[in-house]
Length: 431
Image 1 (tube, helix red, strand yellow):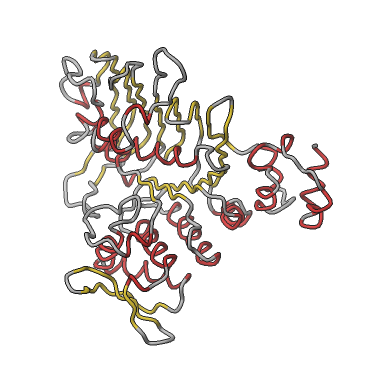
Image 2 (tube, helix red, strand yellow):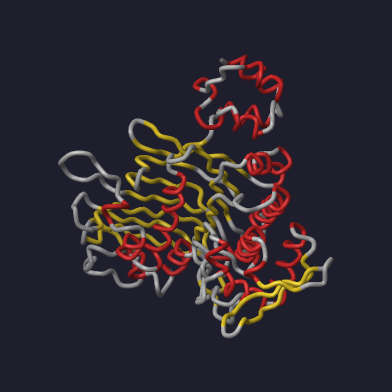
């Protein structure tokens, strides 16, 4: 699990330093930086998995990813820092990884540093396909420091022979050396983080269902769900969770329309069958998201942008219960970030019942001093929620979560009092 995330000069985000929990709600006005915050996870994952240059190209190139600076002069340094907590099922005990790109107009790594402890690989067939087994009663320390092309530190006993230098200034050492050996544990963990903003109409009409992981926009959703249904335990879990939200669906089976792979949905109450192109966008979107979380080894970190899109409130609550459950799994837990404007999500994720079972927190994306940042919601607001002085959605509607209560414009308290007298009493008390 990510225990701390630091960003400097990433897109519109000038300065971010947050300490996430198992389930994290990110709110903020339009244009405040929520999508850029989600992009940061994709950038880190692809930089570790595909390489730094490809990760930048997938987000528009270095000029688009690094914060723009008005006027002449050197561009600002883009910096990423990430701290990781224990995840024994994925071989991780703890870790800190960071890198900084130079102020050159061309891509060049200025510094890179890793300090981590991992569990060593255990020979034998993995319990889950593609995930190695680990010996959890021993730990190995992995550490290196790089300044430009110079390797200033390198733990040879665990990483092997020390390289003479970093021969590619446009590449991260974690990517270059993380495909084999013990570094693979850290590289795989960071490279497996995923971001989703599923476009259900696109998924319905995409002819090439694709392979591998679910795409961010869900273009290969049908093919991804077909593969999930092929695993019997996963299929049972998936259908159980889906029926909680959409009870009239009895079963889903892979099918084809001519040569096009699709899914066929059988309704319990009507006895009719419908293809994926005929079901609601919300049902298909929910199915894809559930399939991500309920696969045998889900991603360690998942970011879902605006999960409320096309979902009924009750279906949304079932989805939130599901991610709360998978965040508490002993094997392969998933940490989740939700970017949202939804009062329903605020009430569930920040509600007292949910917080009693799952560690949650709320972050606010906002504009500050000509840039954007993401910060924890004001402590006194969160304290008021924990004291049950109002529903989280009440604070959200009043703008209290977004700007801090002292800056909140409550022009007509009489109208607010009709909606929630406890909240207004609290607002009046500290105004």
